[in-house]
Length: 359
Image (cartoon, rainbow, N blue to C red; front, top):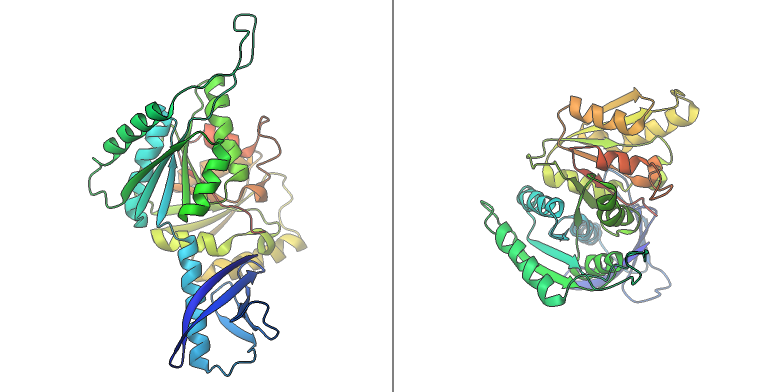
């Protein structure tokens, strides 16, 4: 549930309304004063069709309601567009590669501003017989600012860069710092790099990225260390046939797809050989209701390893990006056990875009 304000025109008046959305952007309560006794109630279908469920006490015309609906639609589009992008860096080669990828992606998304962010929180190293003292600051604010401005200068040399680049650096815990900036700066996409070279790097870099998978408030784009930017023309949306209507962030994903203008392939991988049941047929029907207007291709395949099935399919189809919703494929059982997210990110050359489950 989210509350926001919109301005719309009713007759000769410009009015401000308080809008509360729920049921995954399908139901809206509109009030012109707080705790209004007879508010306007609107329904919005997954296809974007509006219906007045309760007109409220004001004598609005059909044109006035159309103005209100358009104002809400515009606000939702702004909410899920990628006007502002947050790119995380620890100055590693993997993070620098992710930043370069993000800079080029920003051109395709028409992103207006890129924020580079580095958290230089202290890292407490475990005490050993060789190093009995644990925990010390890894860097200062001045050194972090120097490094992040150097990265900014390098990125600004990118051909045809249109987005403005700003820097942010502080000593806040990473997840808290990221989510604070997401809310303050209206971030539409967070970009992070990941590596899989050795155990130490997986702990220091991989664990942070995988923690973001669980906690990040904005869509999270994970860039493997070997990924190189290609214009995104084909996207694989890997989805489970469970709780499609309850959990899929349809509006957020649709807004991103529309920004890219890419071809959509919707994929379900059956790793248990159960094939279709009454429940899965119902979920498939919901899937088609959500996505048919985008004219996607639907694919249903069997594979004993879901991660390998997804990435093998994406490679076969020449996709440039894989999208999924972590909870729908059970990514988050444990950050330090084998999970689908770790397989997808550590063993892939394709970027992985993760959207939060609708709640």
